[in-house]
Length: 260
Image (tube, rainbow, N blue to C red; front, top):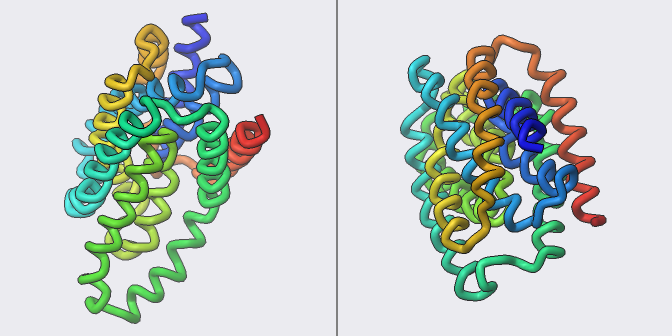
């Protein structure tokens, strides 16, 4: 069984490296639907998986100079405090775990939305690029507030479901920064921001008792080489095919979780 977990880690890690998405979006439903783990444990373990595995891909993107640190700081100003507040709320109000049915439906809904948005990334850039060029510098004061607010919303969603740090952030950044971020910078910024967010949420989920450490170790054995290899091909492969297939997988997984 450990070999199966390692293979799953490798496949998901490769997707994360190439596209910047797929960590929480694929791993959490995979652990629930294929391996039968409790939803809260799947989310908590997946957050550690994302934090550690993305660190390796993030190091490569940082070396290649692709992350935009200003945008990362703005996202983190919203996402990190929101994550901490969500963890305190989970511990104080829900005893550390949401009801499994509620969590499955939230996770499923997040997956369906992520899957629907994923193939729209290339279409989203063009209309907002035109709007940005017409508005000029007048939009800049609103970019900061909108980025912080987007980060806060993502922080809550990621902490509860482990989903959203990839696809949803990527779409938000394409809308807010169509001129500033090219494909390579978008992936690097997305991955680097996801690391501290996932780490904070993972530490909190550990405190709440929602992590399977032996499972995490097996996943990381596969994911570290996978995400490192995948990051080297970011922006060099036909992402339309990869994202199309990933989109279908996310929507199907989301519907299954909602109906579970």
